[in-house]
Image (cartoon, rainbow over all chains, first blue to last red; front, side, top):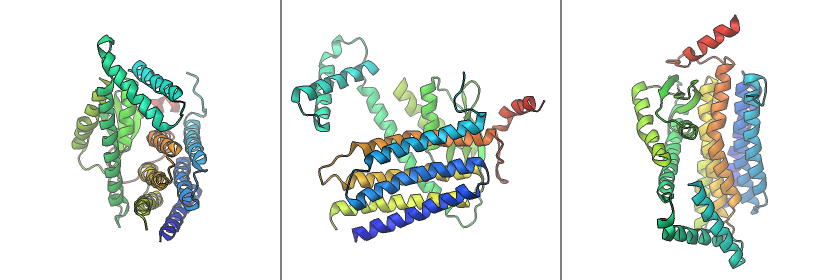
Length: 91
Length: 158
Length: 119
């Protein structure tokens, strides 16, 4: 029963990931795509959490931490780039 | 305040070395001992204890969690409506908060509350522009933010 | 099912529901700013719920995984910031608001800047 619930949850999250991917593909603006990538990163972290339960291991906890940090840094870098044309401010 | 926390953490680390066991449980115990030492020595400290602020912070955190849950139930209502007839809008809210930390905190809190996301700041960092997914009553929304969040943040920082 | 499995499945189902809700919102809503509500709030909430489930599941085995809690804290801190940056850059690059937008207080602030850049 528990395994069934975990698999169902994985399936639902997988559909959500596909929908985010559709939003990234159809746009229409660059910001929509960045937003899709941001949501994709956050959801992927949750996905790995469910896989940790399924495989009964905590080996992926480092992956979770690094992925959440990378997703955030990527979002900030991309938004700053399209806003000003530069990632680092001079002032 | 920062110095006191540092002293407290240092006591906890020293306790860990003394016990020669590097587990979270030992750290927590050492931290509690550090708190006890700070309470005993409070008459010799020039500054006030930070526990009162810590308690305000814990209250702020729980406010945060409750508002986040309410925000998501609100999103359910907006997203699952068969016809999308919500009325979004951008509202300017003036704050009385002054330092950058306070304003950052307020912007973060607004972003995680029902139907609002902070969008931009004015030049003098006094006005926060908020995008709301459903503007029912503009003045009521502004009042709500002033009463609940600004007060809680001021309790922590003042 | 043991108690811990019931609690874990509760958090898993809540997390999956809000993740899916956020996906529907991202697909259905009409402009970037409204979509950010769905993407910023609901997916963060769903992810936090899923990570709490993972945290609770390993407690009976005697593992208290601090890294999972750190990940939750980190997403909690960064999600509003990411949302703010995406919305701000969208407004500054001129992504249009949807038609039935009620009011736009931000327009006045950028009026001067636009005039300067068009000259």
